[in-house]
Image (tube, rainbow, N blue to C red; front, side, top):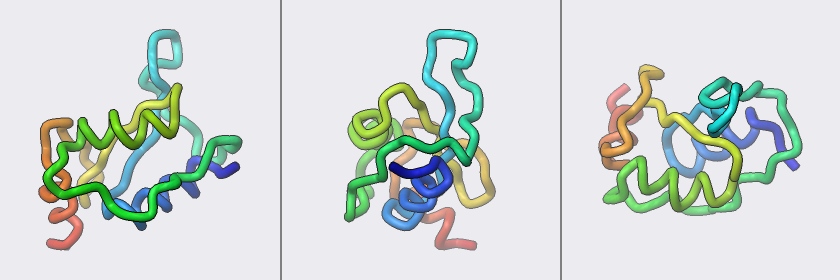
Length: 99
């Protein structure tokens, strides 16, 4: 089992963008940050990046939530700003290339 920080690094290395874990709702912790040192979660098991044509929302539903139930995620652009679920992964990844 891995820590949140290690999984965030795995996702960055494979998918090409940063993410931030938050707790999924409902409840008092809904939307709150998950500590980076939290352990006991599975590793990110994908070895290839998702297709550029997918939206961030589709990636969250098909890859992230399927692997990490009970958590939600915020995809971040290269400046650390949250990205809309309607944005294409290609657009998000390009923000990192333009740096």
